[in-house]
Every structure is written in structure tokens, then in C-alpha cells.
Image 1 (spheres, rainbow, N blue to C red):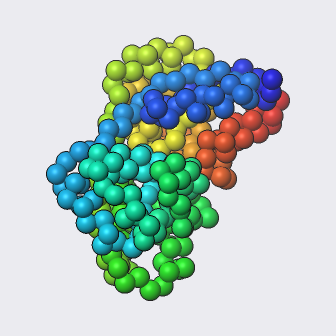
Image 2 (spheres, rainbow, N blue to C red; image 1 turned 90 degrees about the vertical axis):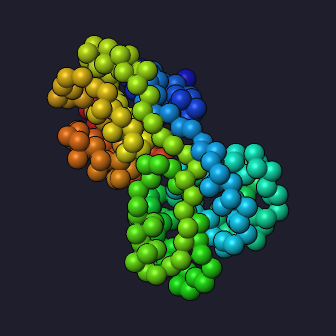
Length: 257
């Protein structure tokens, strides 16, 4: 068995359904995952979404900035019994390869993926490649999604609509368990895969974190939010994926000897 993680204890804070894949990869690399899901994701079955999905054929492009958005979008589409062939004439933009893989699981292919996996690169690179956009776009969002895409499209006078298909809330049921772990000071790495996870962590933690605690952020947007909330000892991979996070941890351990 591979042991580059040397049985380091790695806290995984992402939503429960998504934590398993991360944990399995930690184990494969010889680490010890500890799952404390700080977030809960729920799809939004509301009349406005049903009506919007009924008009989906009006859009030439659909933008997804997370796997959660893909999953809830198609869950609602299936629930409303929307015909899948309507998507044959629609193109899809996804924020990264993981989101694209989730899209493929529903039988659709991503037509655009930015070189850097965040909404800022998604916005600038898309408009650089597609200079003429006549039909309105649809942005699939969650309640905590940033305003990067809407602001960019508004600035460039590109018509768009948004649909909020999922809600992210804090999972306060794990607060006591989280603080018990923090008080034991036995966590080698704490991982964040979204700004929302950083916010939930800051909201739930009691007391101070030990000065040498290492945090690992999946990308620059998450790192920025961590810095804003006073979390400074962070690692960020070049490739904004959980594999990239693990590679960064392994490199850190190797450097420390």
C-alpha cells in the first residue's frame, strides 16, 4: 500500500455524499481520513424552478459552477419529467473536469471548461472564445454562489437568467464533534473544498486553533475566504481538485522530512 501520507490525520469537511471519494483517496495514499461534514446540500423543488425548466429550450448555453448544481439540476429535470432530448441542442459550460464528469453521468458533454477551475477564469475565457452570443444563457446556482458570472455577463451586456437549484446550509449537528477534535490537537491537515466550508468552520469552531495547524484549500477562491476569516497557514494546489490537494499535502510532508 502507498504510504506517502504516513498515516497523517486529515480532516475532510465537505458535504457527506461527496466526502467518501476524498476519504478513499486519502486511504489509498496511506493517510487517515476523518469526516466531519460541515455542510448540507438540498435541492430546491419550487414552482419557479419547474417553470424555468419548462422553458429550457430558450437557452443556447447552460453554465454549471459545481457538481452539486449539476446533480440538483438533473434531479429536478427528472422529477418534472422533462424530456432529455431537449438538451441535444444546448451547450454546456462547466467550471472544471469534476463538474464535467458529473454532467457526463447524466448523458451530457461539457462544451467548455476553463483552464483554471474557478468562476473568474470561466467568465473571462468564455467571452474571449465566444465573442458573439445572441441567445440568453442560463446560470445554474446555489444560494451561496458568488456573483462572478452574473456581474461579468451584465458588464458585457450578455443576456442571461439564473436558476437556484440547491441550498447550502451549515451542519450544526457536527459542531461538538468538530471542537472535540480541535481541542485534542491531533489533526495534521484540515481541508476545505469551498468558501462555504471555510465559513462553516469559522462559525462552528470554539476557541483558538493551534498556531502550526495546516489548512489545505482546493483553490484560490477558497484560500481568499480563509485569509479573510483569519486562517493563514494554508496550502493550495496548482490544479483545483482533491487530487491536487493530496499532492500538495504529500509534497509538504516530504519537504518537512
